[in-house]
Image 1 (cartoon, rainbow, N blue to C red):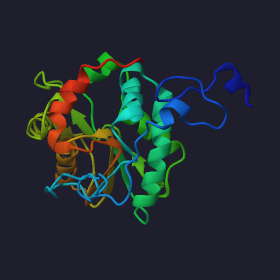
Image 2 (image 1 turned 180 degrees about the vertical axis):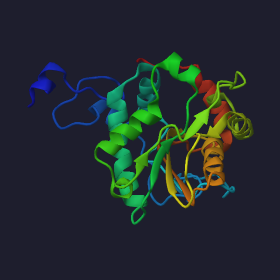
Image 3 (image 1 turned 90 degrees about the vertical axis):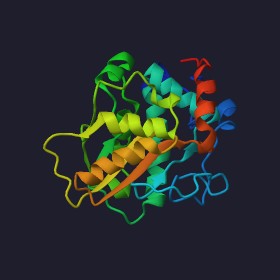
Image 4 (image 1 turned 90 degrees about the horizontal axis):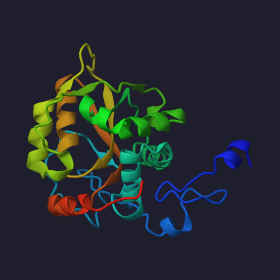
Length: 251
């Protein structure tokens, strides 16, 4: 065992508990990790057995995600967002690497970017969870990202978010909110390039779809999406989110 592990024992990304050697998640949380099993819907990325997206039009080519945003993974993502837990980003990047390797096999991306965060949101949190996942992902990139250039400022989000929290909005509200606030960064050359857009969670798909539309208008030949988790029941998501947002999570 390395000295670093003795001084700073690895902790479970989901609950913060101590891990045994070789574990990624503790025994308690392992049973509460909900994977997103194959085969998947090409439109929303959800397993076909749970998909309710009705094949709605989208501006991205495909979305891939290893987990459902439920149970232990939901707790992990909330710990990462509001507790600045780098070990969670490392864990999610590891799972995402395997997903990208398998489901984007044969693809070559030119650019890796993330769904943008406003300066105010970044200052209040002190942490950009999507960027953190992306940075860990590129430390040992999957084959489709071997030649990709990271550009975390490719999309910019304005300070004016209309006072609306994205996670409390339905698909229509999210779409209008992102359309009014996201722009392409200055002096970006995207003509003919393949872009991988990364986020921590894909919920209704409205945010990623609008970001992809902006990238395509900027000249991108294709935009694909990768996320740590997706929500299963998108039609009923707004109500679930409001209820879940009131729950407290130990950070």
